[in-house]
Image (cartoon, rainbow, N blue to C red):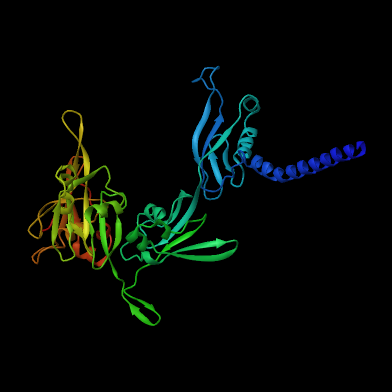
Length: 410
């Protein structure tokens, strides 16, 4: 019995030792991984950082006070940041701890002994290139969580005639070129964000031009959607698709355009119908009414329609306060088909203004049109050749109007 009693505890001890050893081997990779991840944030191109760097004490500061450079800093497309005290520094691929250490080591000795530089990540971002049929093609830095609609908005929206159903994304996937097609038009119709693919660093987005018809399996197909346009005082002016047999009410269109701006004048929303008729709608009155069911009176915007939301300008009052007034230009002269005040939304050329005002009549002298403008309190008559602008000849085709201008058509 004594012999067996010694063997059993020995076996139990051996089994317990093996169990603890296996448990430690199982947990050690997990512990090592969690330890390595604590505070180890790798910085990439486009990331937004908050940098704190001790500075020299100047006469503006008490010797007992500390002086620090504290700024939000964006990593550029090549992986550099610029600091006034240290110049351009390449930091992409390094952790926030490594960057903090590097910036500290670059400090004068008397500063690095008492203080340290600190770098913290505010937001993960990346650079995306957008090309094709958009207002402002180029490189844009957007949050990593943003989708393709975000960069399209930053590029000023799509131009007229853009095909949002065949937007392509070109990507370098580990040295292999990859192309993804995104149907933004379908997203705008359904509102399902799952339709939009995620963007990666250095992706190139291309917005193609829409053709009148497309050939699929040898057959010509005509698009089943039309375009509506909204411009002026909205956050995302542009061209949006709508089904042929359906429309979208004005409120839903404003929501699609990400709402009106603070300077919007909702009392006189202009709707230019595809058949040439015009309507004025007071949405402000609808928003302030307390009568139920008034939303049924919202106008329906259909394919080919154009909606303009006028802007208001800040003007001074006698009491020193400021109020908002719509920006306008004036059409006048015997050759004009529509005289009087017209809404003004920059950028706008005289050709655009005259076209929106109904054009010129048969007796107009289109070679001697001039723009009356106040410059430094004095009146100036600026010549404008309507015929040259129609042909696309400089400088008339690129002449830019300003608020308050008077277009005189003899």
